[in-house]
Image (cartoon, rainbow, N blue to C red; front, side, top):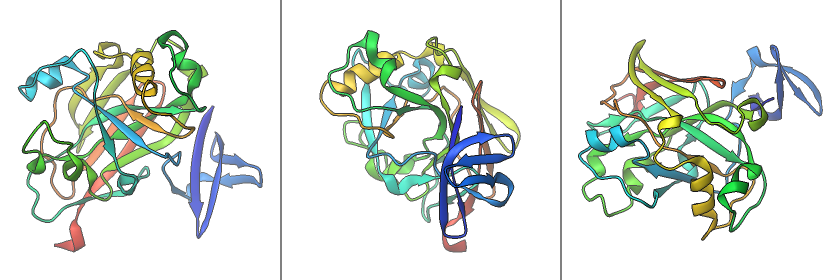
Length: 248
C-alpha cells in the first residue's frame, strides 16, 4: 500500500493511492490536480551520519561502532515536486539521497529482533546539507541541515509488507539526469533494526517519526535550477528543483 497526503486549495487529504486517485474517507481525490505534501507529520526527524563506509571515506572520516545521529527540524520538510531554496551566501549545498523509515507505532526499549514490528513503511528523503556551515564535526550540524526546505520527503510511504524484512534496495540519485549516487541499503553499516533499537533505548519513537538512514558516496555541490531525482527500488522517485532564495 502507498500512503500519501495531498493538498487541493486549502484542504488536506490523507489516504492510500490507487491508480490516479488518492482514496480517502471522503472519497477519491484525483492526484493530477493536487499538491504533494510530505507523507507524514513527524514529532521528530532523526538522521544517521556515515552509515555507508564509502561516504565516510569520501569525507575523510572514520565510521563508529555506535550510530552517529543528529536531529533535523520540521521546518525543513517539503513534498515531492516542491522547490528547494538555495540559501544566500552558501556555496556548498549538497544533495543526500536516503531511505527514510517511518515509525508506525509508539515504541521504547525495543529489541533488534522486534524492531521492524514498529515500522509503518519506507519513503525517499533528500537530506540537503549546506556544508559551508560544518566547521566542527563534534558539534550538531543544526545550521547546515536546518534551512527551510532542506528535507524533501516522499512522494508517499510504501508499507513494510511491500518491502519485506530483507532491506535490500538500490538507491540512485541523479542531478539533471546524470547519475551522481548509486548505493544499496544492504551496505548499511548499522541495520534498520539496530538503528531503531538504539534510538528507542533513550527516546520514545512515535507514529510518523522519520529516521534518515544515511547516504551513499557521490555527494557534490548543487546550484540553482538543478533538478534532483532520487529513486529507490520498490518505492518510486522523489523529484525537486533548486531555486534561488528570494530570487537573488
